[in-house]
Length: 158
Image 1: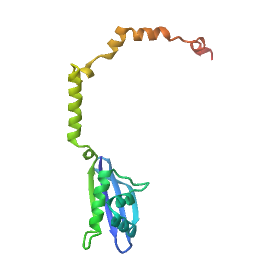
Image 2: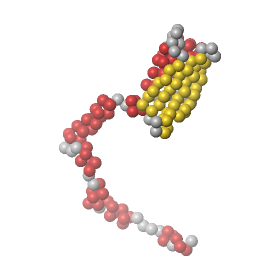
Image 3: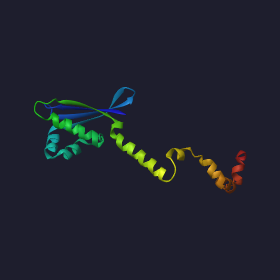
Image 4: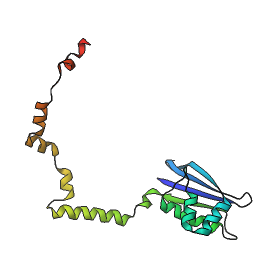
């Protein structure tokens, strides 16, 4: 899912606004949420440290993932510099949250673990489990133990 955050600083009104957009329809971004902050509160949290700024930006209505919030915080810090732009647009792709190297490493670990046991992951997926249950008699025993009560068989009488 594609997302966009628009950050607007209005120095005259002393407000900072963040708008969150998401791609709900193909190639069309829709506004999900808009939060407004007092610029003085944001400045004072920036003066403390970056984590204080991040905590000030997160609200009940807007709580972006950490990676997103860090980039938003960087943009806001830049906006408060003298002569800087008073707006920023940040684009994110959900799949970028997952590092491709980590996903590939996890796949290799699973393949290595299976090959240590003398089988490939694909072989595990291709096995027909139904045959295994029937060979062991599990399904047959299950059919023997299920009994229908007399009241259930006379449904037409009700």
